[in-house]
Length: 136
Image (cartoon, rainbow, N blue to C red; front, side, top):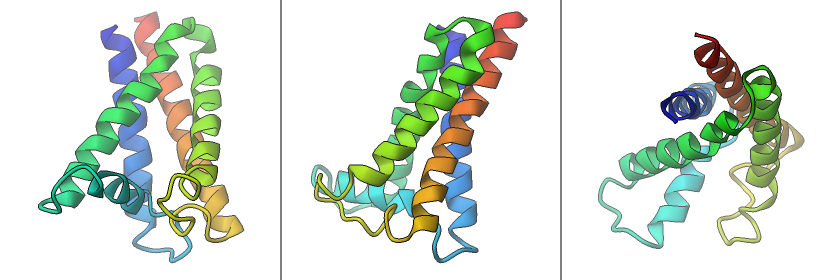
């Protein structure tokens, strides 16, 4: 179980690091941070909303990417990539219908592609970490 959670944390940190870094240099980058803040604004006070969203994103993404632990070690990178693609597609298609707006992940084709790429890369990282931990 701990190997899956560590792997999930690696994926969660990867997607967060990509978002936080690239958004500072590219106006068309997804704003996953804003998505998390909008989701939480309905259920919590606005005090420290950014920090709460960051903790929530890391926690939920850790749990999501830890699903790689359900696969065997050799298939974990493929499983992680599949999780990432699914998560990225969800990040592009779901915020609008859920009432969080299309502007954070669905503004342009580049924003959409980067959203899917972030999640896919993070899933692949989670899978690679799991494979290496399982082999040890």
